[in-house]
Length: 536
Image 1: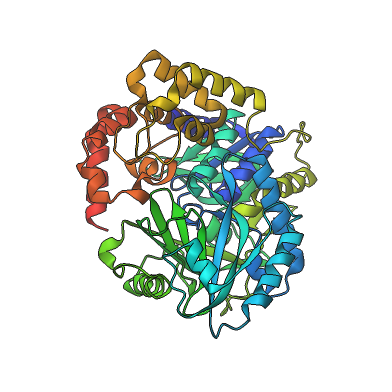
Image 2 (image 1 turned 90 degrees about the horizontal axis):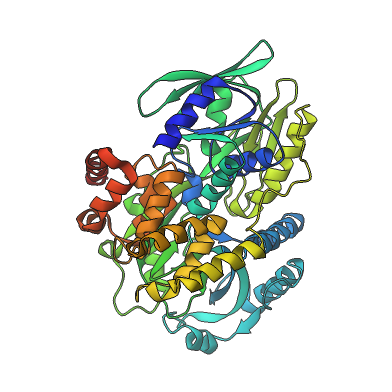
């Protein structure tokens, strides 16, 4: 909490080259890239970091195979390059995973024809992943017995990538990188409007927690508000070429359904892609894809019925899944960039291309659409456009993304071995502690080891099945600007995704977690969380 208060004070005291409004993936990479290259950067969000769309994805980093059907070959080529670059840059986080795809009889294309498409996709991906393989119905059943193949014409396996932890954690690490390089960052700071006065943008900001208002001065403003880009542009009297349409996506988390750690891919009853995605000891199923007007959409009974009906129809389960099996839900809107006025959209046809509209005279930029896969390109493009506005980037050549060097990783692994860290891994854990801590914290994982070396009890798990150490909570309290309990449970970690809220509230470890994170405000923050759970 101290870090946030210190940064809020700095926001009003200094003048910045760039103010980034919004800390989803677009805002996070913009801040990380610009700061590493030498700009003076401020980043604010009226909620938590990655609080909306960027924490409700399928956790996939894929090259857009579905866009082949629309003949968007240039887009697929670009996304495949982006996926490969992401996998090279974050080998511990963005990992290859096989997609076991089943096609039903009567599907709009024969299985062999779609398989040819996967070979084209593999070629466009520069052979970076494993080669696709064609599978008969019996071979699919042999590979994963839970798949119902009674109406199956055949299928195939191909590769894409996924985020091993969760999307919000991936986004936050870009925010953390921006802070490490000196960006002034604060969550729960809203922006009412921005006006140009004496050649500078003056953004009227406010602390969401206590309501205090202040002004942030900057040479340029980047509107990276995700689904709220259009709203913020209206308040700033900015006219853009693009605007957003919204598609709602819902996922449900249930206990593990599969025996293999592969994404099971199908086409749902409405003809759209439907996934059964491994999530450690849980499974994520979905998604929906429906046009909505409100970016703050919620899961409806119809959403739950659609997903449960499809998974029950596509899998050969011992008993059908019901709403009682749902552990948690993910719901977000995909902001889709379109030119011109609003209207109806064909979601099968409309892609996730990003678009950046620039008002060079005002030094104002708006980022529309986009996806996790393409995030490095967004950061690079933003830097190029800011430089064209006349804002100096003295270290243009600096690389702002990627894991730490092999030398740093080797030092971490050596120290972890000296501590015999992996022997402290709980039996129910999905991976060894050395692997998990490095992926989650990169070079900062050395600070976790410092805590454990000082006090071995820091290696203890506070909540069973949560896969989070006491030392990680101490680190989070100091370095991750956790303002509410949900920030930690839902976004810095994925505890709220894999444990039922009532189980989280009941576990004894949650009391100590609050004490570590919030100090003398522990009871207040825990009570706020319990009340919020009771109203949802």
